[in-house]
Length: 525
Image (cartoon, rainbow, N blue to C red; front, side, top):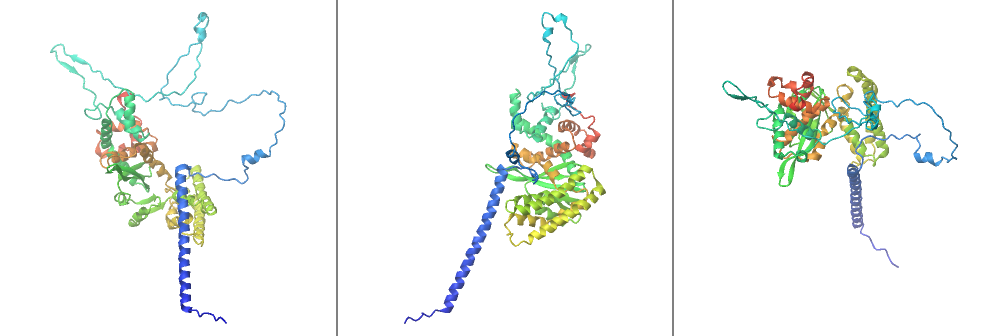
């Protein structure tokens, strides 16, 4: 008879506990790896979207009552072709906009040069030409283009001799913008507009000059740009001061390479952008993204600071009680867009509710509401939607199945932390729902960055000049001013203008005071 072997009970329990602990570690590690894998998948999908996907934030609204094209066509029977009959009728002439100059729909202003090309009638060229007479003309317009051209201004000055004493005299040469410079103010203004409005780097402008038969060194072009920047810097500084006097100030930053870090590598810097109440924009450059850069400008600021979700702005506003911090709904929405693949149903609901807020803003623009009427409309229409959205947000945060690495968790947490800042616009009619207007104005920096790639020096040259020129040119565009006309005038006027009245030369005020009769270049007189 075989008796059972006695078991060491404490040793068995210890081994079991060790096995359970090891199994729990494996389960925890597997869960962590699974979450990390999901997070990496979302990141990979986001990078693919940035490289190959659409950049537009517009969404296609699905209509359940609308059939797809294939569903419509599959049930259509192809009937026999019926017999046809000719029916004559009168048709109204196709409507054209009121500002169309030609029947083809071509529109242009009186300032566009028109060259007349005469096409003689064949009848007037033959042997029987004397039997015909011209009684009228018909005109056809075509839009043509000739490559950008340069003009050499040749000033002819008479040398006169006094008959009695035989002395010679001549008229003084016209003064240029810079001493001993062959560049006319029209050339310098065109150089700046080409680079900073149309993002054509100096080396490409240099190539175009050579193709036109003009030989100018690239260093000369750079020198002209830097000297113009020194002249215009006080005006750009006044634009910044004008922005800081606003009640609602939008603020953002964008990176750009500037300055040599080491051989073959550039430093990373930042252009900070201020957008004021008067539809004007100002840029400054710094090699740091720390809010310590803009803090000196905001110490005396009293009003609403509208920003994205960068934590530095919240920390800065907490130091100054006179600053009310408001944040952007578009940036909040973008976090939910990133969670669309992970949580499609919840994301669809979030985007639907945020879309309803923008529908209210569309109604406000369409009705032209301002001031108290705008605030009352937001309180009546938008505030219940905002309250509903944050209640839904809190319910989603209580879900037990959402792990922290889930993109939806990040979107919900982002909005939850900024609930107070996102509601500021409801009580202040001067505050926009987002910073889209600022991002549109800021776009000139990334667009230029893709063309001129980087600024070679940080201080006193390229980077600061970019800030000066983009401040003035972008503010001109926002005010509906031709930047070329503005620069031609201000570059000539600034040396004679009183320093105490420099504010008059910022684009907004310049248009009121000098815009009707600006100084012109000799080429345009």
